[in-house]
Image 1 (cartoon, rainbow, N blue to C red):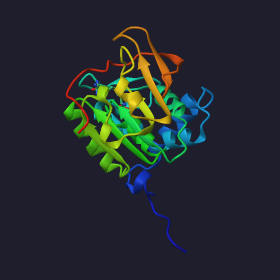
Image 2: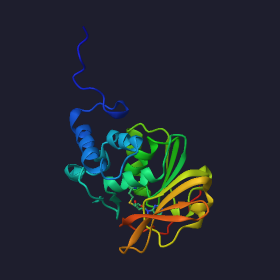
Image 3: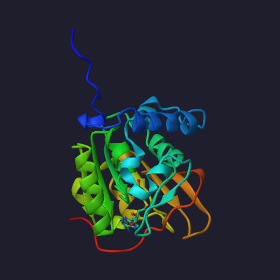
Image 4: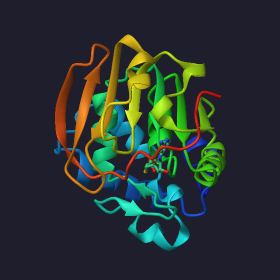
Length: 230
Ligand code: SAH
């Protein structure tokens, strides 16, 4: 008979000293905050259960990592509420083969979820230090189908276009035209539209510009910075 390993590997083969805890808390977050609140896509629930949210917040916020809210984590950056991450991801209706663009890498949490659900992700961040920290974190998780780029996401990211899915994690006063241009004909774009600090609505937009409102949100603004496009 073989001895059982004392500590099984965590996600992506990482060894965890206390293996039950972060993943157990992650599963509880999924059960309590996502199931029964409109998240019905089994793949999205699975991905959310596999990525420990605490890996994306600073040490002093680990305890708060699984709360049902957004968290401020420095540099004017927030990690969105789990329900918002799940809802935006679900709205992209990913089946596994898509090329996806995210604007606003922040901690990298949303990008990690996306990477579990599609073929390739490019995520663009305007603050270089945030992009570097997120890239290091995502490398540690062993997510290979993901690229972090520094630039102004208003311009999208032409080198890897076209995209079947585009997810914008900061609020724009109006839809940035380059994002529509970089979508495939059947592509889906989710973006918060509205003023900084004011009433914003999450919209699902199609290539022809048709938009439907999903729900009200409060995101940090899409800032204009360096030009993107590599
Ligand atoms: N998706 C992130 C949360 C994003 S918070 C997560 O899962 O943690 C919004 C992020 O958008 C911030 O990091 C901010 O720096 C970034 N941002 C703001 N304006 C931007 C722009 N024009 N291009 C790219 N990123 C931008």
